[in-house]
Length: 145
Image 1 (cartoon, rainbow, N blue to C red):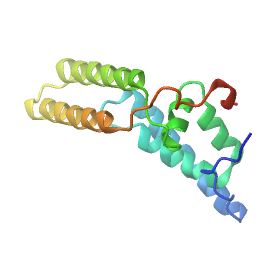
Image 2: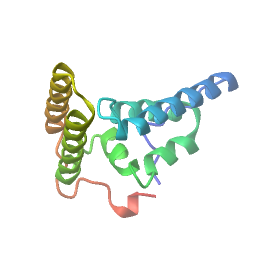
Image 3: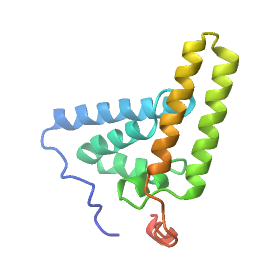
């Protein structure tokens, strides 16, 4: 298995490594919460967690980037391989269902409903501008582990 270019040298000093591990775990938690909370982003927090883990613990970094739920997508994003159209479509479908349900069922203030939809439009624009993954560009299953 080739060395991961995103894995930085492990920080010297036990206290610094522990601090980075704690901060990375905090970002991972925020990212997980962001999966179900409409306004809280997921990907930026997972990227920050990967950076912290990459500097503090090789095993935590590898666990994060090989996680069966989001690891492959995160790893593709981190290594510039882009995002497949299926992931984009699924992301946008989930986003709009959650935002719409939240706005209709749980929010009564018109300004807040409007804000939710403005945020959804912004996220949609961001997702649509992500590099598209070309056929054969995704890592092979043999590279996965």
